[in-house]
Length: 215
Image (cartoon, rainbow, N blue to C red; front, side, top):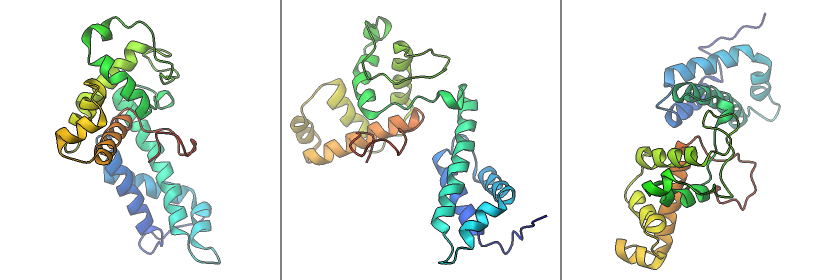
C-alpha cells in the first residue's frame, strides 16, 4: 500500500493554493477547510496520478497539478452550490452575457415579465432544471435574481442600466459618467460577466475564441 507523508509532501503548497482559489470563488457554498480536506483526499486516492506531475524528468509540473486539483475541487464546489440552490449540477444554465443583456430590460418590466410573448432565440438550454426546458419566465426570474443579488463593483450596475434598460448610446453614457467610451464598455462587460457567473458560471473554455463570453 502506497503511503503519503503529508508533512513532507511536495504537493502540500499546490493543494493549499487550489483549495484557497476554489473556496474564494464559491465562498457562499464551501469553506477553505472543506476544500483543503477534499484536496488531500484526492491526493491520497490518486497517488500515481499526482506523482506523475511531481516526478517528471524535466522537473515537477506544479502548474499542471494545480489545474487538475482545481478542476476536481470545482466539481465538488459546484455540486455543493447546486445542493444549496435546489437544482442538479447537470442542470446549470450557463447564461451568456449577451443573453443577459437581452433579457434584462424585459425582466425589469413587470408587465412584460408577467406576459411574455415568446422566448428569445438565444435563450439558454436548461437541461432537466425544475424550471423546465427553455422556460422563458424562469429565465427572466433568473436574470432578475442576478440583477438584485450580484456583487457589482463601483458603477457597473448603473452603467448596465443606462445601456440596456434606458437604451442610451455609448457616447451619452460615457459623458454622463465622466469616463471614456472604452472604459464604459469594459465596465459593462465586466458587470455582465459577474451576472453570468452568479447564474452558474460562464460557458466552457472550449468555446470559440470569438465568443462574447470570453475575456
